[in-house]
Length: 85
Image (cartoon, rainbow, N blue to C red; front, side, top):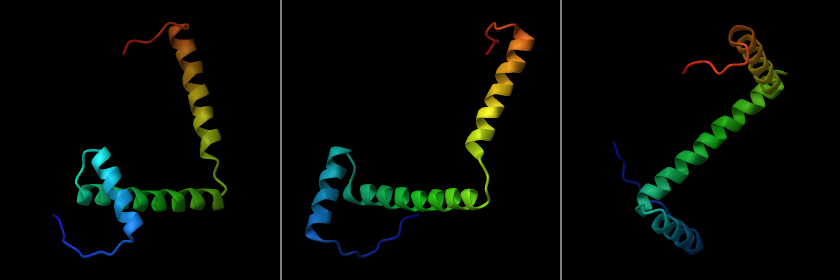
């Protein structure tokens, strides 16, 4: 579904947007849609990261520990040989 809206941009902003859209082979509308979607996702991910930090969770350390555990299990089960895909 697509909604038509009227927006106002500075001359400089619209010229840059047109240039980027052309470079990426997109219409101005498609490029603006993509840019707005990317901005919204950045906001969501930034808010999520802040919430994780406030909760005191260290997801990176946990992920690295999980990866080390997988390596240890692989070594024990496969003796360092690559496992079948």
